[in-house]
Amino acid sequence: QVQVVESGGGSVQAGGSLGLSCAASGSIVSINAMGWYRQGPGKQRELVAVVTSGGSTTYLDSVKGRFTVSRDNAKNTVYLQMNSLKPEDTAVYYCNADVRRDASRNYYRYWGLGTQVTVSS
Image 1 (cartoon, rainbow, N blue to C red):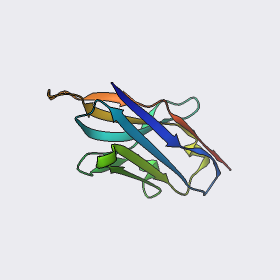
Image 2: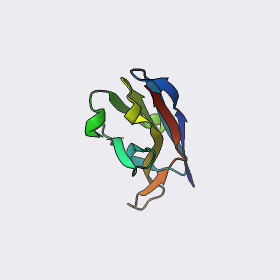
Image 3: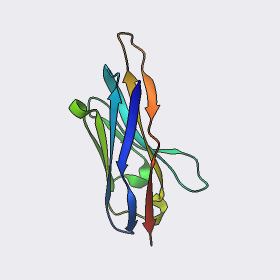
């Protein structure tokens, strides 16, 4: 099977920085996109940033210029560096990975359990 585990997060004051990392492990042949989503209190889960295996990135408009997503393909790990944090960034941040597990062309999406990020004003 495949496991996706986030680390990092915590509490910070507005204007501060935090870094998240997420590692996928297990029966992995290859990984296509890896991404970060978040779900704030009383809100729906939303895409924050995604990076493909080729390095192409997509960001939520409200985090552009503040957050940077990157990945280490050799380590099956994706990172999210968050700068100039705002109280509205407070959420549980989830990582996912689109994984090919065998010789077929099928990719399956795996999710981590999430890590809390709290930004105080």
